Image 1 (cartoon, rainbow, N blue to C red):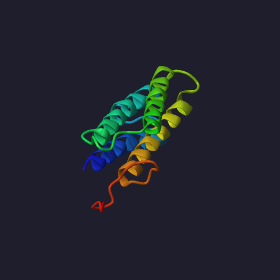
Image 2: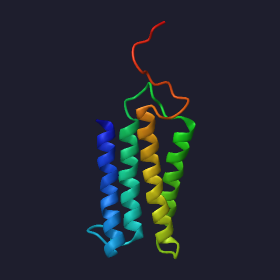
Image 3: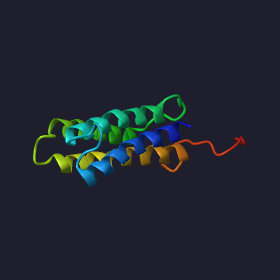
Length: 124
């Protein structure tokens, strides 16, 4: 259920971003700064939803690193929203949100190496 909620939050980032790319603005998103803010708020919420309440499956160092990198990219895109590099930074930030989301889904599905995911009853 958490993955579904987080996925909906990521979609809620993607829809205005695509609209922003097509039309140059969306309601409440008029420039790269607004789109960066939407990505930061909803992306952080999606990450926290995916990570909450699962004490047996804490993020590994790589997962935390990917999330921190995405967060840093978001703040950089927000801070440099009035520069010539704003659109590129925003695109990289949006891509990093997708990477974090995919990594978390892969972790929850048990596809990441080095993770202890139960596959059924233990036969000791």
